[in-house]
Length: 255
Image (cartoon, rainbow, N blue to C red):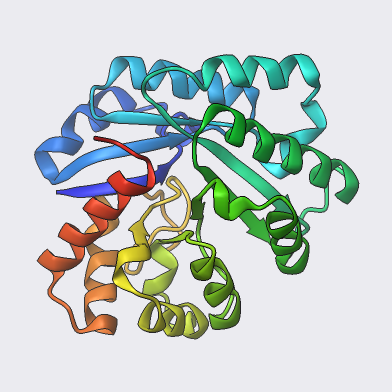
């Protein structure tokens, strides 16, 4: 059974068929899903999903491009909801300089605040880093993030950065991009990294694998990611699923 460690099923892309799609996932090989908060509203949406679906877990947090909405009261609210028994991580948090909004100092401030929140509540972090490789790593090292643990979501950098994060004990999230013909750098990372630090993710509704690139993604597409990883690593698809399932439970500390 497959564990999707990063999904956004509260996204409007699922409004038309969410009620029929989500209950069908376990019957089609999806054992568990972690729905990710990316703003205060999507965190609230996530809390509803984990109440409604037994195989759903949640992460609570604010994506770097949404940190302009944060204040101390909302940070305290995140701390409260992080104690929900089905909340398994703080995220997704980090830095995103692709959109470059809000300003970088605001992103950095709330990144550090949410890292501290994760430390305080004893949960791992889900890291989003886009076009911000150096600053992300510098902050994580300065904040001793190896003591917190977590996953680098949708890992998109090269082997050198993979080595840094793996040495800190972080997992790397691998999704549909690994199936793309032009994903040479990511394929090199997958070949290099140890299997005990890999988890599968969709980031749905985004980043559908080939042959569905450009269409709405869902957990049902993860077998295509498994197949690509299997070919790169020379390990059976069954073994990839078994290992990444165990890794996901270890990452999120699910007994």
